[in-house]
Image (cartoon, rainbow, N blue to C red; front, side):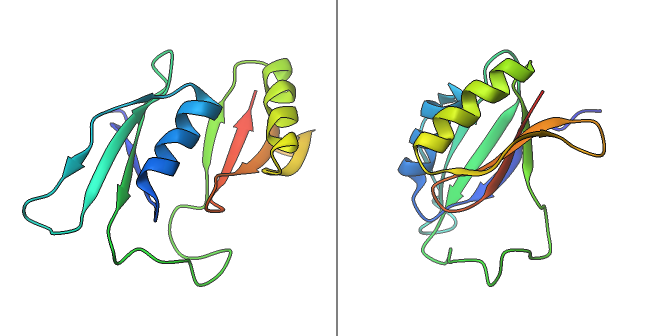
Amino acid sequence: MKIAHVALWTRDLEAAAAFWSKWFAAEVGPLYESRNRPGFASRFVKLPMGGGEIELMTGPWVGDAAGTEVQGWAHLAISMGSREAVDDAAERFSRAGLLVSAPRLTGDGYYEAVVRDLEGVPIEIIA
């Protein structure tokens, strides 16, 4: 078995797609608009080198999370391939004001930095 894709609710579908394209070189798929659920739209973004897919979803009912930690998935971790790649990406995110925590070696053995997307969703970039 393998995970086919993960999904992320967003208030701004096009901005979210642009974020994944710019920061992770993701290929953005076509817009899907549901005929059965008015207002629902989505796009898949495909990470390079077989890194998987993320379904970005939106609808007029999507709002802010009530707090910083809510029930459900806590974060997404993207493997950058090397410590140098993590450092480079962290520097770019830092210049954009999106870096949450600088690269470090975690207690469970990952070299990681934490960034946030444009809506505040945490993403770990790891080696």
